[in-house]
Amino acid sequence: MKKLALLLACCLPLLAACDATITQRGATTTTAATAMEEKPPASQTTAQKSLGEEELRSLLTEATQWPVLSFEYGDFGGDGISVAFAFVEIEDREDYCEGELWFVGPEGAKKLEGGNYCLPVKMEAFGGRQFAVAEVYYSTSSMVNLWGVKDGRAYKEEISGHGGGLQRIGEKDFTLVCSAYDANLTDGDWTGHTWKNYWFYWNGETFREYGGVKITEGQLRRCDGAAVLDGLKAEGKTIGDIFYRGNGIINVNCVSEYGQGASYSQVALQLSGTKVTAVEGEYVETGGSYAAALVPGIAVYPELPEILKR
Figure: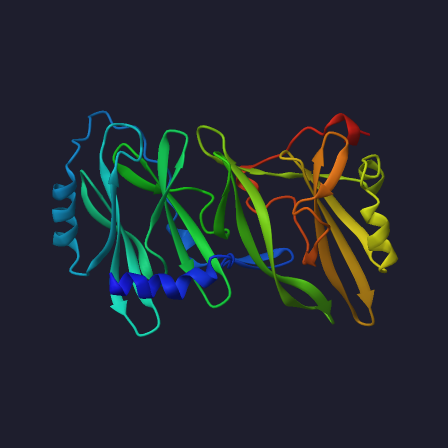
């Protein structure tokens, strides 16, 4: 318990940290963990035998000698097969811990990922299923991997490896934070570390992203509260791409040119009916620019509401 307390004390200040994928406007370098991504297994023709918690613990201790810091047991796939996700400590240093995530099921124990500075796995419920959230921390960012269970086997969701700091918004919605160097462009070089929320949801079958549909400044100005654009222009900013998302979020990108370069920023608005307001209750401008989607492969692009239609 002392080691776990030390680990939590070290990691909690980083919970707002961001994706280990560092993006430079158009170029993305993904960490090696993404290459581990697995697809959901095909349904098996024979039923898996469900094992008890102690049986699964025994399988884990036979497979690894490292101390077990957390052991999550249950029917996470909602199919009557009990399995477990375990976090084991592989090296306890003075200021942090390196650990491994293991999965234990009817077919035995398997290491899913490890050798990183991270928190013990936690479970998040979406619909009738539960997913293991494994977050790996770096100096100024983090990366979340979501592991699901089907037919007694673990698989990595496609959303994994793209952002950190998962935060729930109600029962089905949540955000992931994108870490990028996209605040300033000077002589062709991007600098300025930024962190931006992207919005996701569980559709009852899988995870999807609220993809952004590009709209014009004129379309946005039809909404009450769009005068915020005048304030941005008064500061010498040029309005760039504007994206509307299916959850009502509107991201307004801005650019300010100077000498041999430019700085980039954005404002997030919430559309409710015909009125836009700041997402956090006030107009807060932060660095960097939004894209239409963080994970294009799972993005769903909405139909525009009447007020925004051309």
